[in-house]
Image 1 (cartoon, rainbow, N blue to C red):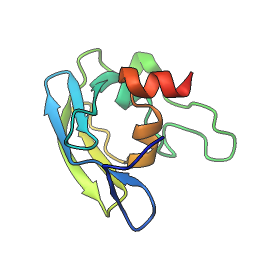
Image 2 (image 1 turned 180 degrees about the horizontal axis):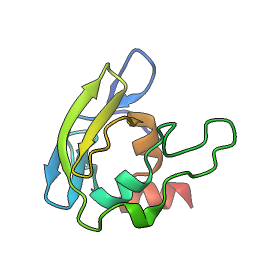
Image 3 (image 1 turned 90 degrees about the horizontal axis):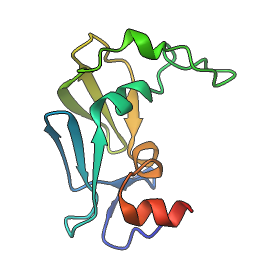
Length: 117
């Protein structure tokens, strides 16, 4: 994946220019030049990588999707160092750290989807 227009953090992770809550969408502007990801907030919540949602040793999913409300919302966003994002969810969950690399690898934009194919 090209990162020519992105800021690179100390960890080597791509740092987005902006992250916004837009109703049921979490918008990540990767480069300020049109590369924008629009993640459905529920899909981000269901992909939580924390130890309470994913078994650390095996990677087995522990989170029951039925336990996450269909209208779950990102109540607050917090940067974690220069490498990730913590989301405080409307269902009370807030322990997951979504690294920028994790989000970029799942970027749903057409450009990234084509690169993964």
